[in-house]
Amino acid sequence: MGELIINDKEVVIPGEVIATGMDYLPAGGVFREQENIIAMQLGLVSVSGRLIKLIPLSGRYIPKNGDTVIGKVVDIGFSGWRVEIDWAFEANLSMKDASSDFIEKKADLTQYYDFGDIIASQIVHVSGSKIIDLTMRGPGLRKLKGGKIIEVSSCKVPRIIGKQGSMIQLIKEKTGCKITVGQNGRIWISGLTSESEMLATRAILMIEENSHHEGLTDKVKEFLESNVK
Image (cartoon, rainbow, N blue to C red; front, side, top):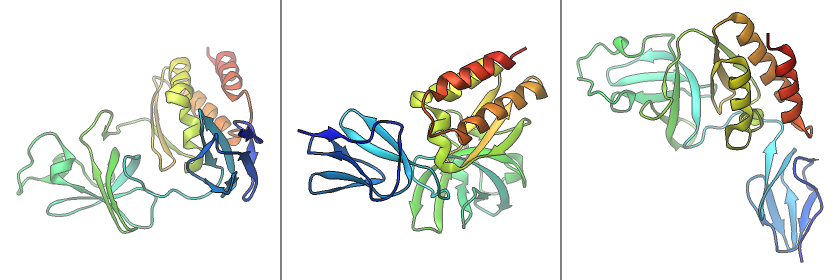
């Protein structure tokens, strides 16, 4: 019979045994050695049913298929755009993936996305470290106008979003801000006032700093409610 040695939301170090027995299954950031599930890195334990995984507490962003990322248009070519996403190499946004509209080959691409534009896009293909393809065709993928961008550690993004988006939804409701979170650690915040944007920023940074603490949702809710005017 299996035993969970380290509880959900607790911090572990590389090599630490999280569970024993065959009742639990290893997911990301852990591995099985005989009957033990062992941590591969410093991280926050996440237990979902029988699955055990780690949420990393350190490390830089690594692009993955399906990630929503916030990037900056840095170059425009004949067939698309180059986008900086906080990775060693720029990502590609082709004409066919840039819009649901048909874009003619001789079109002025700056009419769609110009130099310096900030966009929320999704990674649809990663080949090695150099080839990363993006799309703008999907819910919530768009040019981000106004507001502000803050940067957090990409490994803290899952905690900032929360289970099924619960944490970020709480911040949206209490501050009235529109918020888009990129898996690359960039977060766009747009509120009716600079004060509401600042409150949302402070709440997000609070989560980043205290991501390994228990009862964080209640603490963030209390913080927001005590500061909402």
